[in-house]
Amino acid sequence: MVNKKEETEESTEEKSEQLKPKKLPKLAPEGIRTFTVARQYDETGVSGEGVVIEGLTLATGQCVVHWLYPPPRGGIAIFDSMNDFIKVHILPHPSNRTIITYDDGEQERFGLFSEEEKVEDEKDSDRTAPV
Image 1 (cartoon, rainbow, N blue to C red):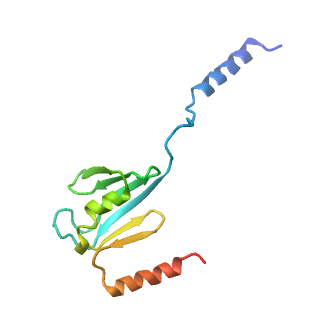
Image 2 (image 1 turned 135 degrees about the vertical axis):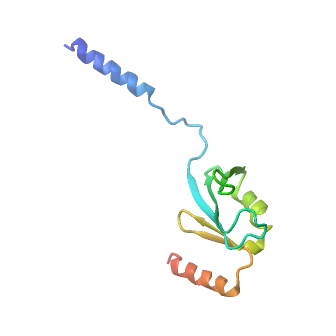
Image 3 (image 1 turned 60 degrees about the vertical axis):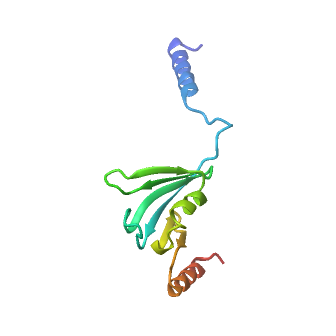
């Protein structure tokens, strides 16, 4: 025979379990990849040199960037894709010599890097390439 106290505990546990959030089957894909954007030069003189943006890409492909200028808060922008962000803010400024570094260590370089720097990049990627 089950006493009332045990019944109450079971019923409370069941209710607690029912209240826990459950993953819905029709959600968007999950996953976030973070990155920084560093400029070796700032041709406009607005955002500066060094790391000027921190950002993330979502599994949906959308890109969110946080400009670190102007202090203290900077600004936020959302793009439909990383490519859209690059087309608007990176490619038009090749003299900035921009490096995007992802949380897994992957880097993308844009702009007017010297041949010596390009060769150095190729050597680095050869050393880290999977065998």
